[in-house]
Each structure stands twice: as C-alpha cells, then as structure tokens.
Image (cartoon, rainbow, N blue to C red; front, side, top):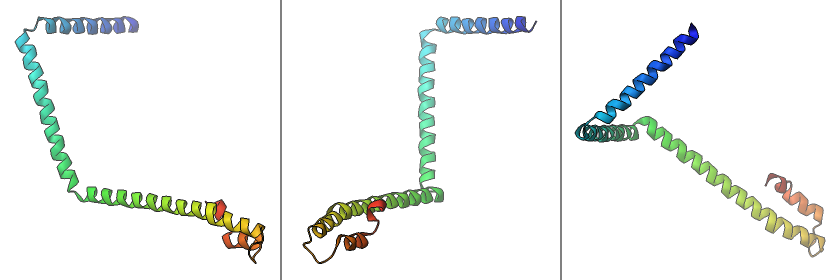
Length: 125
C-alpha cells in the first residue's frame, strides 16, 4: 500500500503541475505583462532594501572593526613580502658575492667567517 500511496502522490503532483501549466497558457497577455511588472517592482524593492542595509552596515562598529582587521592583515602580508624580498637580495647578492670573494682569497677573511656572518639566512629565506 505504501507504493500505491507514493504513486498516487506522484500522480497528483503531475496533475497539479499540468494544471498550472495549462492555466498559465490560458492567461491573457495583459495578466502575463502584469506579472512581469510585479516581478520587476519586487526586484527593485529588494535591491533598495539591500542598499539601505548596506549603508547601515557601513556605519556600524562591526564594519569598522572588519575594515581595521582587513587593513592590519593586508599590512602584515605586505611587510612579510618586503622581508622575503630583502632576504632574497641578501642571499643572492651579498652572501654569494662575499663567499665567492672569500673562496678567491681576495680578502683577509675565510669562507667560514662569511658563513658565520650570514648564519642560516639561506634556510630562513
């Protein structure tokens, strides 16, 4: 019987859907145009409400906190990028140059001294 109830419910849904489609097809053009205008007005009203809500949100303390938090995170990311860029230049230009010159024995210091000077900068970078 459970299967028969499900079949009956499905048949009712199909009849209802076909009835709605039939009625929509029978509606005069004026009513269909009216429905389109109503849909446009409803959309306009929702956009207006959304704009109001957005204005209220923008002046709220929570929005100010969110903006400050975003600004702080952005500044931290920029600072980290600057730091990584400086470390890259340090490793690629200075450390490599000094180690090469120490290997060529152009200066009084040794390669070990250059390694001590820069420590584990390469591994940090």
